[in-house]
Length: 113
Image (cartoon, rainbow, N blue to C red):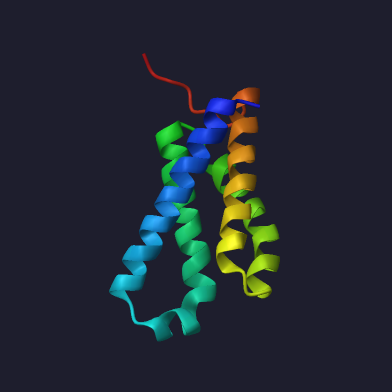
């Protein structure tokens, strides 16, 4: 496990999710989230994961698979009414996924010289 990627992916994913959440909350009415949150939330999560993968130079497909896997345990927290706890769990799982990808060399985009 690459601890540097673990911490950087966790920080980047958490920051980008928080920033995008604030922007969406300011831009859209509250009833939008009641009606469309089940789609908007996962789409925002995946967009942030794509950003994280790009910054850390991880393969997009591998990172998005990890983001999807990370979202599964967070659903339980969301269903129990602990939405932000679910997001924190997902960030941790996603960071672990990214760290393992980097340590194995799998899904890492080759650097060009």
